[in-house]
Length: 315
Length: 315
Image 1 (cartoon, rainbow over the protein chains, first blue to last red):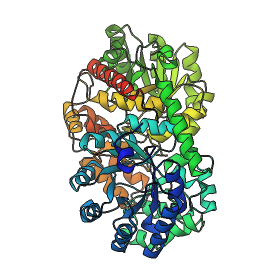
Image 2 (cartoon, chains in turn brown, blue; image 1 turned 45 degrees about the vertical axis):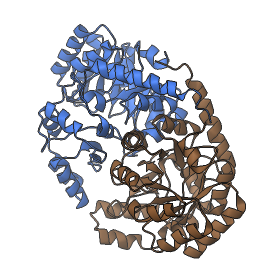
Image 3 (tube, helix red, strand yellow; image 1 turned 120 degrees about the vertical axis):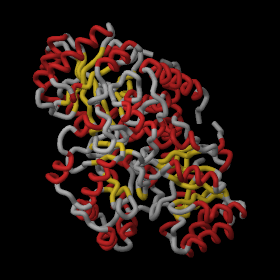
Image 4 (cartoon, each protein chain N blue to C red; image 1 turned 60 degrees about the vertical axis):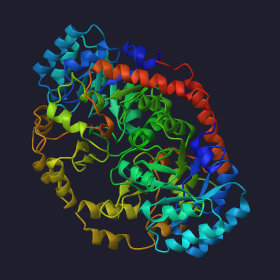
């Protein structure tokens, strides 16, 4: 199956690996791209020179298309943008900021731009800014998330009805069945995060990976809503946040509690007590760590099986 | 298409109208059942003599199967149960309580029992208690909801993997595409609430219906989490709750703020300022009030069209 997304990126499968801080460097991105999906380097946790290194290594590791995720509020964002231009990166996924600011400069340099949104208003705005596609990310997704708390099941049909450019579904997707469900809702591709955190090639700390394997339903929660909402695996740090929030902590108090470097501490250094552990709800039923290529093969096979099962299921 | 759910209930379409306080009396339930779905009388907002009246009227209005929703924490629950037995109601949907308490007495009286859950633990427990099927309700659903905040996209695959009895998906479903997506995830039927609130036959106040028509994404929020989480349409009452919660209000303070009769005031009497307005996230893109039979026809047609579009979409 080819569609607007596979054609836009020049990829075999409409499966995109989410750019994730501390978890998706060149090893994961190149493995996903080599397996026929679109790998994304998560630049939000990288100094400019680190991103440059990852881009160079990714180019050496695959001749397939790959992308870089650029959180637009990143302090050194201009250097990151320059790296993409200098290194000939063909695709940028922008997030956490205003698509009006960087879309035109990226596109002028021949870079395809996809913006990540969590609501209809920003989907429409992104289209007006000239992006090539949108990632619509539901409430169940790991990490930073929208204030509307709209779930993938509700968000995708809403966004698909509101824009003409292709929509990539994110949040709660990591299997062939969830991928097919998202396509039924009108998405033309899926972006998958949590499932790829539990890959051999992800740079998540093994402690973090093992903690995710223990997750059940209810093991994550959208937290720190007075700051920027972020879905976290429940641990000691989460409990401190929760208690502070329930006691009516102010924004400043929460900021002080959060401090700096918590995400690195948790996800990259493996401190399960004090670190911030960003993961999606679907972690509740991911029970193995696999090579990225096998993850993609499993998804493709399950998707095709699920589609086959639907034949003659008319009502 | 026939499956375990259509056979269990003896219905044409695996489409179930949710039992909803103040919105689903005999008129809605009988209209849905007459159109080939399963209508449910929402007994949670009815005095025992009112439920009796609704059951009698529903029996007179349809010769098709219908059900009654029994919130198990309802103070006069024993009288409600007796009404079902006396009147020969064949199907009970139980919710908001322990399925161990009433499943056996209902089943001994030839009543099929379905229990509503929002997490894996209670799904397994319900199966152990001998219920015939489960409704698994995601975070996006209107009204009272689970503390795990698991969305339909994540909850359905999780529950389907955990129990052998059939699973009915609820939350975020109200169109043919969302229904097909839920079936792809493993559900054997869907339970639809918000879409039927916006029917001719629902007893929701016209002010409430009109307010729902104005909803956008982000217009609802899961509120009152320190009491029992409930998804509300944002209004003055919601704002008061939100402010109290953000200031660290205690359970007692929230209980006092909630008071009594807010749901009736909002949904049945049409007081949009002070009432509690329970509705799901999907309200953001429901833009018409229709006869229940047309709602079902539209869903069936869209489902079949979406299924047809999937032919040859193998990847």
